[in-house]
Length: 411
Ligand SMILES: Cc1cc2nc3c(=O)[nH]c(=O)nc-3n(C[C@H](O)[C@H](O)[C@H](O)COP(=O)(O)OP(=O)(O)OC[C@H]3O[C@@H](n4cnc5c(N)ncnc54)[C@H](O)[C@@H]3O)c2cc1C
Image (spheres, rainbow, N blue to C red):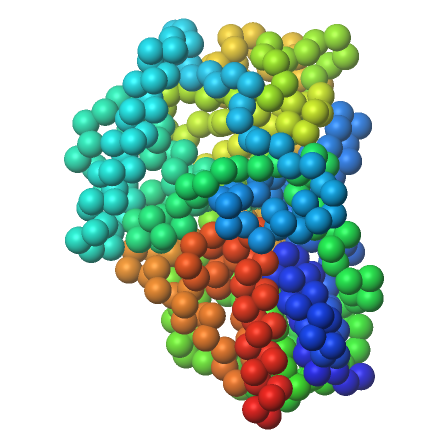
C-alpha cells in the first residue's frame, strides 16, 4: 500500500495532522496501534458516570485550538471554576482568610520561580528554595508533580515557565475524549502498531497489519514510546533527536476513581475540590468531587509517588489513606470501589506527558525540526507554550502536516 503521508498515532496530534492533510487534498493514512482513537484524551463511561481518564480540561482556552472546534461542533464548554475549594491544615479546614493567604503564597511562588529562572535554568525546587512559606511544599507538589507530572528536583524551571497554564480552563460537557473522538477521520486504521520505519522520505512502515510506503511520515507516539525503542528505525534516529529525547523523560499523573456506596454520598457537593497542606517532600492527593456530573470522586496524584503507586492496589491504599486524612471517616465507609489509571505501565504511552530536565527546555524545538520526510509531532514536540496538553499536541500535529506539505513539494 502507498500514500503521500503516513501518520502514526491517532491521538490529538495525529487527528489534527490528518484533518489538515485532508483539507489540503493530500493522500494520507492514519495508523493507530490501539483499539480506539484519542490516545491520552479518553472519556470512559463508567456505571457512576463519565470519566476523563486522561485530559479533562482545555487549558489556556484563549489560545486553545480545540475551543473553536468544540464551539463549531455545538459542544457546550463549562468554566472549570470549582463549587467549593477546601484545604485541610492537619486538624481542621482552612478558613477563607487562610485560603486567601494560600493564594497570596501562590503568587509569591510564581514570582520567585520566574525571577530565579530569568538568570539561568535550574530545577524548579531550587528556584523556589528561598521562599519561606508554610504553603511552599503544597504549591511545589501542585505545580510540579500534578501540573507538570514531574519531580520538582528534576523539572526544568524554564520548561515550567514556558508552559505555564495561565488562561481560562474549560471543560467540555461530555469530556475531552468525547470531544476529540468524533473529530478523527473515519478511515483510521486501528490495531496497526508500527514496529519499524526505514528511510527518511520516502519511508517504509512495517506494522502489525502489513507494510505501508509513504513519501513522508508524521510520528505522534509519546516520547516514552520512542525512548523505549518500541519502534525500530533504519537508519537510527538522528543523534540530535536522541539527545533531545534524553532531556524529555515522561512524567506521570495518575487518577483514581472512587465510587461511593449506594446511599453514602461524598461529604462535599459535586464540583468541589479538596486537598491538604503538605510537609516538605510529602506527596498528597487532590480530590475532585463529581466531575462531569458523575457520582464518583476522582483523586489526582503525580510525580514520583505516581510511579511508586503504579500498582493499582498501592494506588488504592494511598487514596483511601489520603481521604481519611482529609475527611476523618474511613474511605471504606463511603467508597465501594476504586480504580486507578495505568498510563505509566501501558506500553502505548509509558507515562502521562513529557517534561524537560534542567537545561533541557530547548529539546522540544530540536524534536520539532524534521529530518527530511520524517516528522515528529505530539505534546512533547510543542514549542511556544501548551506542551504537555491536548491543545499543544493538536497544534504540533498541524505544524507537522505543514512540514509534510513542504517536504512533498520539494521531493
Ligand atoms: C492523567 C492525565 C491527565 C491529563 N490532563 C490533561 C488536561 O486536563 N488537559 C490537557 O490539555 N492535557 C492533559 N493531559 C495531557 C494530554 O492528554 C496529552 O498531552 C495529549 O492527549 C497527547 O496527545 P498526543 O497526540 O501527543 O499523544 P497520544 O494521545 O499519546 O497519541 C499517540 C497515539 O499513538 C499510539 N501509538 C503508540 N505506539 C504506537 C505504534 N507503535 N504504532 C501506532 N500507534 C501507536 C497511541 O496508542 C496513541 O493513541 C493529561 C494526560 C494524562 C495522562
